[in-house]
Structures are given as structure tokens and as C-alpha cells.
Image (cartoon, rainbow, N blue to C red; front, side, top):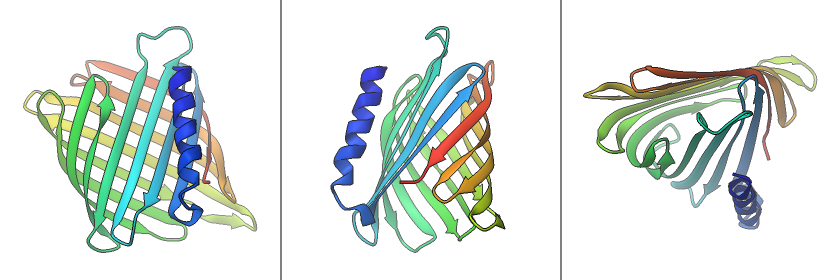
Length: 206
């Protein structure tokens, strides 16, 4: 696992040489009661229409490896407008490799952002995948904003609800850093298996 972390950081360092104005790197660390979670988003704008994204997540238990979670997704997006795009993605997650095609609607404002995507994912069979992301950062005083975010992803297929997750963050934002309380909820196999992780988070926008 340490080798994977090192590879991720090496990738971010290499990408930084491609042009800071086109690259963003946002790591997010959660220290919870069950595990610690590292997650990042790396975005690289190829041109006005095309964008590359890498989303990586590792959730590692303190006491064992039985319920470790991993998710690595690489996405190429084509923007029809500022709000509407189509995406193709491939990657690996519990329990294996996957491929996704989706459409996304996104709104970005100074104090909030919202995105919703819907598409099909193939991982040992096809499923309908939906994703919702929302961030809100109201101004509290000079140099300080509130911070709330939610990320929810769910898959549906003919067996029901094979995979889902909901991540919540509540805290404050100071310039490029955010920190506060965090909760992660994961469901597997029609919620026959569920995992929770409650703790604190820190996030930084490079």
C-alpha cells in the first residue's frame, strides 16, 4: 500500500510540470474511528473542450486488511457547454476492473458547486451508475468560510444495489485548506455488507 501512495504522489509531481494553470490537485485525508482514507482529484485541462481526471481513493483499516477499500478511476471528459459534458472512464475498484460511459451536468459558482452524472458501468456485467456531488462554502467573515460537501454514488443492476457510497464533510475553509468533521458510508451487495467511518478530515486545493 505504501508503494501505491508513493506512485500517486510521483504522478502528481510529474503532472505539475505540465502547466500549473491547467492542472489542479486536491488531496483529502480522513482519520476515522475504523480506518484512514486518502482520496484525491487530479484534473488536467487539455483544451477548452477536453479534460482528464484521476480520482483515487484508498481506505485502510487500522487493525487489518479485510475491509480495505480501493477506487481508481481515470476519466476523459468532453464539454459540450460549460454545464454539460460526456465522460468515458476506466479504472479498478472492489472487486475489479470497470469501464463507464456517462453524461454530466455541472454548475460552478463562487460559493457552491453541484454536479450530477448518469451512465452505464461494466464490471462483471452492466449497471446503471448515478453520481451526485455538492459543495457549499458560505462566507462567515474575512478569510473564513463555512464548508459542507456531499458525494454520493450508487449502482443499480438486475440484482439490485451492488455498490453505493455517501461521503459527508462539515467544517471550515481558510483560503485553500478545508478541515472539520467527516463521515464515510459504504454499501456492498444490496447493503448486506456496510462500512462506516466517522472522524475528521483535512483537504487542500493545490
